Amino acid sequence: MRRHDDATPRSGRAPAGRDLAIDATRGLAIWSMISLHFANGMLIARPTHSFPLVDGMSAFVLLSGLILGLVYRGWIERQTLGYAYHRLAQRLLVLYVAQVTISLAAVAAGLVLSGRDFRTITNLPAGEPLVQQVWWALTLRFLPGGGSILVVYLVLMTLAFAILPALARGAWTAVLAVSGALYVYSQVAPAWWMYLDSSPDGGPVQNWLAWQVLFVPAMVLGWKWHDWQLPARLDASLGVLAATTVAVGALLYTGLHGPRLLARAPELIGKVDLGPLRALVAWLAVITVYAAFRQVQRRTRRDWLAPLATVGARSLDAYVIQAVALLAIPVLVVFRPWGPGVSTLIVLAVFGACWGWARFRQRAGIDKLHRLPAEIARIRRRRVEGVPAQEGTHDDTTRPHRSRQSRRGHPQRARRELVGR
Image (cartoon, rainbow, N blue to C red; front, side):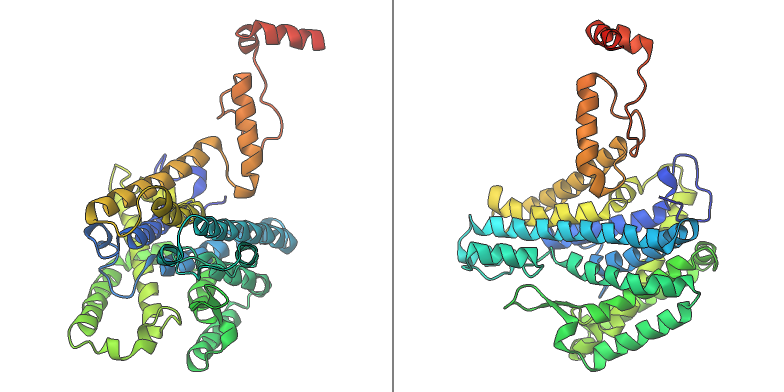
């Protein structure tokens, strides 16, 4: 992947040329999701849920649009729009497979749990025929709680097919204008086709036309990231951003928990329809966290953000892991409700699993998920042949060259090679 940042990082801080502050912000979003889903209201979840109206999903959607704009501009400029479309189609396929995996995990949970227990952990209707559930899963209409974001992401990524040509022609102002107009329309005249439901008879998950106001403008920012020198501008304005964020957080807390004025205006703070106040606060919080993480990485010798950045670099994988764990742990380990101690252990274990998987992909050089089966087969073949897994690159299609010394270490194989010659 090309560099995300225009600043030269310290040695060892940015493997594969990534902006680790973006990855760390995405990692914090994953931590927020995990702590909310497994330990809502408990001490371990408070750090990322004390600021009103901000959650991991908002950051996940916004940062996904930012990365898309950053990366796909480079592909279009270095290759062609057709190449970018090809990569976008591959990404959509990966997202579809990931969501179907989560949905089929919910179907499998239904084979073990009773109707009431099944509804408790999935928020889905129980008692439907198995074939019906599988069909709903394959058609993205069986979305368990804690595992439904990817359908919204799929819809938003599909919009990129129309947005990328406009950005390539320099029409970013028109993209922003259309996005703003569609958001206003989603708020004043919401219609059934704007909503994604958890199941055919279930409630709405999100209003995708409203949520695009995080994704599409973030695409524009990613596209203009270097032209507008956005990292440097954020560095210079961090003090103002931090002060504004603290002041807004205090006002929101007062409005929600004091006179409760905001509670009387749900249209401003709703999550399903992404109320205007929630959308603005998401933008403010994510930008401030990113700018703060840049300073942490610059001013500290030890890479304190490494766990977050490692997980954030594989945020899709981490999301799937936590969504499947949300179904598997109650079925295979311990059913809900969980006390504070058990919830804390589960949060740490799930985040640790996300980190371990991300490290495995990093060490094995598996850059793209659609290459995973081939890469795992190659790693296993190398182990059988006695070749270290880290030799070669992730897109190398040939066997690494064996030295004479390695052949001497395996005399029988060396004799077979000589005979073969």
